Image: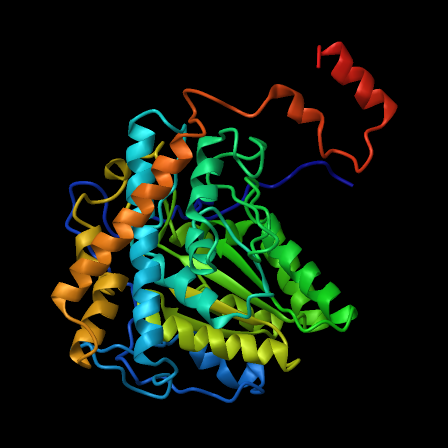
Length: 415
């Protein structure tokens, strides 16, 4: 046998490097974004076969039209009081984000991540769940906690890592954890929470419980192997789980085309696994709530998992360590075609005679006062620049009963 390898003919091989439509200095452009008219996308029964709704992975479910009217088959799931509560939830998240960004500039915390422009995704979704359900979030779903009524003071204490931090300084800022609030511990390793949620949902079913799980992942992290492992297990065992993909267009400085590849949408990823998949206007509070309720009912009725792509936009920086003007047009956020979730819900309430600009300002002022009071209370327990949890606490809660070797280590450390 000859060891000679003949030369290949034709052109040299090359790779495609995806590029966003616009970079700094270019005019913003969203020409690749497919948007359906509000009210046009059908609403199937919760027991529909995944193969029968393939079109819903490409279409975009929307309820609010340009006039602020709620139209179509997904409308009518919420009353005026529920809508006002949702508006207050989103206003609280936005006020909290603004206060914590200010705290970062003042040196009170080392790090923060806001959800500016994405508030509807988490706030409306949490309202559609049972309080006993468990969410497995990423670091941008503070709306899940706030909507669940988790104390704002405890959230600030965690961000400041002060003496009243419920996690005792063992997590990075914004990586909250509360079993009582249905909020699983956040991991800095992206993607892990997706398969954890599927496992939790399987355990719930195996124990004949009635609680479902809600998993969260960003568009960029869908390229992680954990995403695909979660999809296999969810599909195989019909786990009672909602699989949420927040497509906010940017994975730090990488546009969503890298993780999506040649797939038509992120929702279409569900088709190959036989999972019901839907694509939704993530800045439409009514659409988010309606689809979340549909998916929750489907899971609770043992019809299997649902994959949902929430199409939204990350208006702010990825984190306080990021400068988005380095990789996207400066005015791109203001040209996002799906608008602002708070303004859209506000306009809808005004349209139906259940709100006004004056009441909106009063609500915003009241929410800001509540957030400011919570931040001031937390500051009395210390900030990054002052009081912290005792170093000796690193030895606590590792085991139910401290073993001898850990006790010796604590003594050697002088505690």
